[in-house]
Image (cartoon, rainbow, N blue to C red; front, side, top):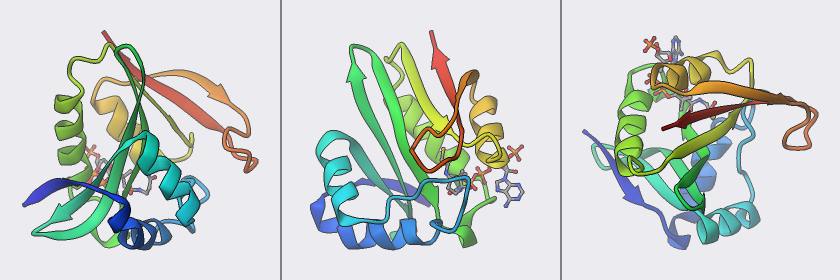
Length: 146
Ligand SMILES: CC(C)(COP(=O)(O)OP(=O)(O)OC[C@H]1O[C@@H](n2cnc3c(N)ncnc32)[C@H](O)[C@@H]1OP(=O)(O)O)[C@@H](O)C(=O)NCCC(=O)NCCS
């Protein structure tokens, strides 16, 4: 069973371990420092994704303004990818954010699995930005609006 557990500063170690599992990807800007996670935990809602009580991923969003949420992070460790867990997690998060008029995020244009996942949930591609995180890599902005 997949559950979402709200993460706190006490989960820093496990959050770092999860993100280090996906830090080799050019298509994902993993959060691999304590400093980044301290900031993320202070401004965003962060969940640990648990399967049968074991943390296998994380997902975060930041409320940016009136009725606008930004999905700031989403990672599942490789051995659990491609099994529909991402879909299940996104369903739960979108239910939690169902009153938002706008939900958006930035994703690498070559991150095909992630892009396809978001498109299947009704996100649309809005724009493309070069060097989005300062690492020389582009991102596309996807948004789900109503
Ligand atoms: C993006 C991510 C969170 C999606 O989670 P997931 O559990 O792998 O996603 P799902 O299993 O629900 O699959 C979503 C879609 O991608 C496809 N997919 C995902 N991984 C796949 C793989 N390894 N091989 C083939 N297809 C795959 C699925 O088939 C599904 O498409 P479908 O509905 O047409 O079948 C996960 O792959 C991940 O952590 N990637 C690395 C970090 C990252 O890129 N995060 C996104 C930041 S915006």
